[in-house]
Image 1 (cartoon, rainbow, N blue to C red):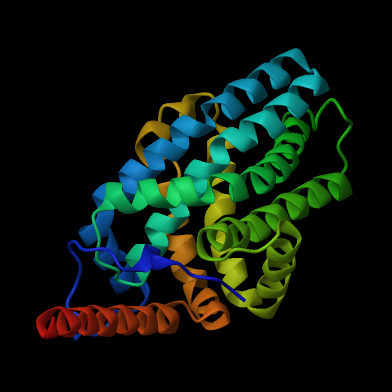
Image 2 (tube, rainbow, N blue to C red):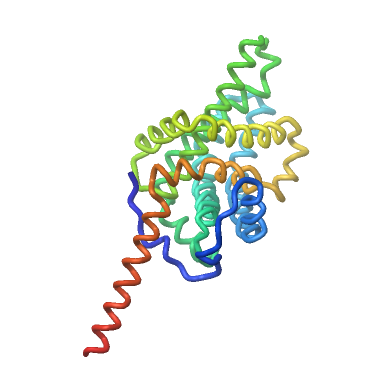
Length: 270
């Protein structure tokens, strides 16, 4: 399902290959303790990239103008998407205990996934923009219980699909339609895990929206890394199982090591 490049073989700090992998909260604390700096820096860049979306939606909500929703959602989403994919790539590298220097790998990932991230950014930016605009105008729309439930379900589904879409952009080279189809299949096929990751994002972003604009300043600290790390930890097993991430990386490293040994032997013979 995926086409991997040499992105997975980078020198740098990591963990012992013989160290057994922890699970659950212990695993979360382990990767936070080891890679918090990388998470924060990648998340902060994602936050900076999302500022046009945030400001545009602020104008849309205050002016009650749908036009600003379209502009903020599409343009703001496209601006934010490469950094969100970069954040996902950073977390995925940590989850597979991949050694490497953060800035070097982040920069390569950003350049490689820039073009592929634009359409998902525009689509989900518009979807989330419409949902945020609707959320702030529920009272003026004469909200019923059914409407409120539908709005919440819509947000939950969007968060659930986005949680699978952006990591795929960092992992595979597929058209957006294929990525979206995979996201839907993964979401439904691993529903308990999907629900857990979705709940993390729903609680976090729900609180951000509920207390906005006061929570705008909190984003400087928690930004995108706080919900993404536990959410991706929850769904990492389905991603790894579906795309053979770690098996593919291990094989690539072995092939590259063998190629290096062959080149050294050829050099010695000459």
